[in-house]
Length: 186
Ligand code: FES
Image (cartoon, rainbow, N blue to C red; front, side, top):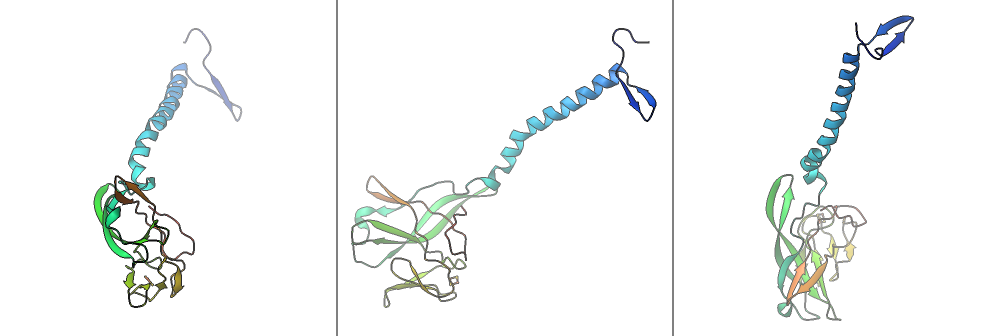
């Protein structure tokens, strides 16, 4: 027989069930343990899932070249290769992508991604026509990257740029393909 306060009692369908104090506190501890485990699991889950929801482009800015060595205003766009670090799941890779660099009439610099906004082929500059052409399905863009014809649903994607100690830097971004509005995917 137990002393002190009576043990918790629960009534079910007219039957009286006596729950011993030990099993009552045991159950309470069990619930507390589960809640504590759930709380502890949150940071672990955040760590494990981090690559799935994080921005996968690790190094934000890539060097394109010296600003002074870039084309003068009125010259055709020049193709440049840039490299940056990327996170694919848990794997870190160094990726190379092509961009087109052009100096506008007001002296500012425009950088366009060479990835076709239709289905991702590499767009080529056609000097004879003064326009970009995608070899895969024939989308055509003008010198500013605006869509002229073909299946692409928007113009070429412009990329953010900045200058640092005489260098032009570009922040490469990947955009969703085959949609009319620009959506950054990484
Ligand atoms: S991938 Fe460029 S037109 Fe289809």
